[in-house]
Amino acid sequence: MQVTLSVGGQVWNLRSRRCFETIEACLVAARERFGLRVIEFTVLGNHLHLVVEADNDEALSRGMQGLNIRIARALNRLMERRGRVFADHYHSRLLRSPTELVNAIAYVLGNAAHHYGEAGHDRFSSRAYTAPRRQEILSRPRSWLLRSGWRRARTVPQWLTANAWPPPWVQQHPLPPRQNS
Image 1 (cartoon, rainbow, N blue to C red):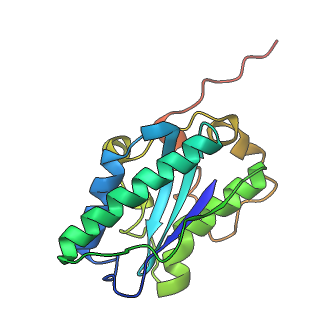
Image 2 (cartoon, rainbow, N blue to C red; image 1 turned 180 degrees about the horizontal axis):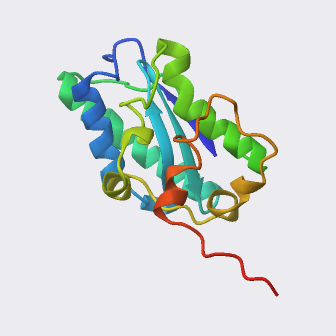
């Protein structure tokens, strides 16, 4: 599932070091709560993009509500303010095929390059993490689509280079080799 969270106009730029560290701490605290798992993410100036996996619709709803509340309270505390942080309810899109998943991950991880023209790994995204740090913040996927189904994608976006693909969680948790029968 691809999720977008947009913040209101009174909220600071989320790509500041302090805001990013606050959001990162919230992701750690909310890791795998209510059956929601964050697999990849990127933080932009006024919104966040996430690739998440949920056990069911209720897990998605409760997990996102908990994450939104956690982030909103932490950002309000940081900015010494009260009130709404998020402009609206989160927007989600179900990823049904390997190609949709690969394109969504490319979109999420490549969004800073699109918006800011940054090359290389975006330091405000999950792509910048090393393996030990990824394990602290992000969850290991459980669904077939995220664990191995992505390999069946018809195309991989051209901008993804050899050092940006396959997805980091595959390098971190490789699948056992296929057995020929």
